[in-house]
Amino acid sequence: HDALPISKGVPLLVDAWPTIFAKHPELYLVIVGSGNRSFDDCEGQVKERVKQLGLERDVAFFPETDAVVDYLQATDAWVFPTEYEGFSLALAEAMGCGCTVLATSVGAAPQLIQHGRSGFLFPPLETQALINAFEEALSVRDQWPAIGAAARESVTPYDLDLIAGRYAELCRSLASVSE
Image (cartoon, rainbow, N blue to C red; front, side):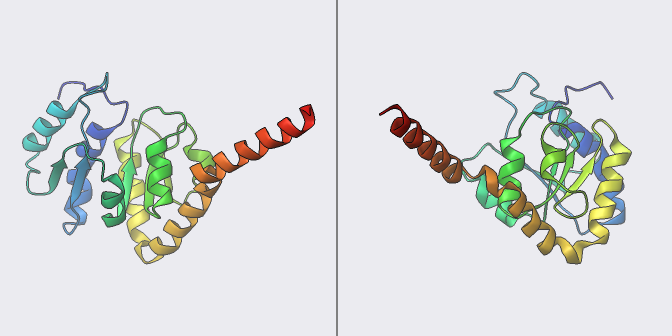
């Protein structure tokens, strides 16, 4: 098929899905959000690829929403196959919700995720690596509650209220020094 812009990796996930689904037909892929405000919007191509692969009954698309946390809390596993990233707020939110995450080993993900303990890492742009990470995660599905708890713990230092409190304390200490 034609090359698609894949900075967030959704086409990679869709291309991996037939292999994953063939072994695990109980799974259902939910793609939430839209690429319409992004330079690499590939939503139309991804939807077309789902049709080409005959996955319409096994993949659902939901529009952009303010209720992301509701989706995160309802998910069993969260996949972030991005090609490149800095510090991903989406990844931190998913981990903060206690999701079992599978993410590419780019940006801050290797610092946030201990492979097999607080999530699963795989190299970007490698469909088979994503499939392998999914298989590994599914093989320890009984451990997902503990993995999700470890994920939540690993992003606790990045909690907005905690960071704001630290900045406030820093400002207070700087103000007291200058007096």
